[in-house]
Length: 270
Image (cartoon, rainbow, N blue to C red; front, side, top):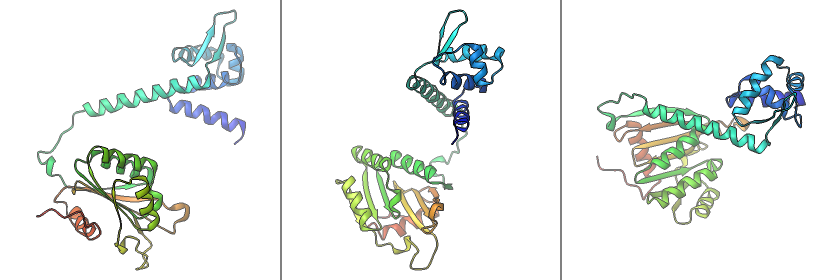
């Protein structure tokens, strides 16, 4: 990446974090100088000089630059660590505010909400990992997780499972290979771990291109099953289906199929 490309990337990221373009350009310019006048900022940033004054006033109010009231006035950027902390806090505050507003928004719920049956699809490792962690953290009693693809094992996953154990949840873990079960036992020595006998998970025996990457069953009524292409190389993008509802046909079917590989989890009596 060339210096010009690096500068433009920094400007774009600052805009993503809430600064206007002229403010971002002025801030990046000041990071290239020990200090500078409005004229010098204008020359480096290519921001119209009359707009530099507006931009630096905003940057000062955001705590990103300091002003020396000399003649002419001098401006300098605060330390990079201090600037990134300020931007990070501002971004976090916005996310927290958004979360509050969304939670307080008027939501029309069905009278049958407690018996709702849903099936949703997800795509992408990050989205599926996020939903996996959310399901584990929200478990009220039981968590059964089968890991087929070793790349699904992450530190954040182990942290979530450890929290579940500490909170008194019943956790049962399965792995498709010895490497996976060994890793599970090492990271979570107090949790029941077994090697699954469900050969259909990989689909290799049937010459199927698609394999199951993970299966998560929470409280026997919420299910997430991920799939991927083992031979996809860099395109090993994971997809998943998320289903909920104790009477949901997909949940019932998969729960009973999984039970053959999870001897410690019994299907509830219908």
